[in-house]
Length: 296
Image (cartoon, rainbow, N blue to C red; front, side, top):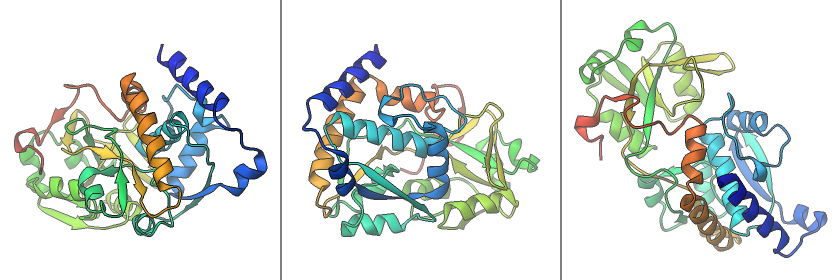
């Protein structure tokens, strides 16, 4: 039923919107800066398919960032946004936020915590939530050789552990600051965080659950392993943000809201994130910080 509904909406959008020829589409293509490791997994997942027609999201290459990319494009299309995108992968991270504020970047293909988005509210438009408050459980990832962390089972066990995060992600940082850690290390670049955990310079980091049966996450030479049966609640919602200062900002935001509303109404958003392995069934994991109410 969901697949039929989505296909009908895509068909309606394509057939009843003003046509654009290839030349015009190329001329109106919008540049999107994307982290290179995310783009690599996105390409492997899409594998040459039309991203607007994909309805099955179970894949070893699916992750939360890739799910965001797919969801955003499908929502924009359903809302009638016809501009094409040109992806520019690289070592980008917080630079995107400054580009959103200035209007150099139309929107972020990576969702934002509401607390982070609200700090930019004078520069960006904030979409309806795609992950609601109370739904986001993060996995605890460590080196496959760090047996001390892999045996983690209680909140008090954090007292002997070190972790890494950044205050630039407010919800992550505040949540981890509320844990009874031995030490919380600041590192602003995600890839450097992962490398520190892999090398066992720090014990663990928080990451979205990945669609992996053995709980392993591999990126080039970096290998991390999910601590089994436990999770940490990040008690905030996640949203797409659109630049107010980009010429196509208002148009993209209106289309995005329409598309997300249609997908939400029919359960499509939760289906995508569940199939991606990101949203987990209630009760599947022991939430170690449940009694603290996270950091919010």
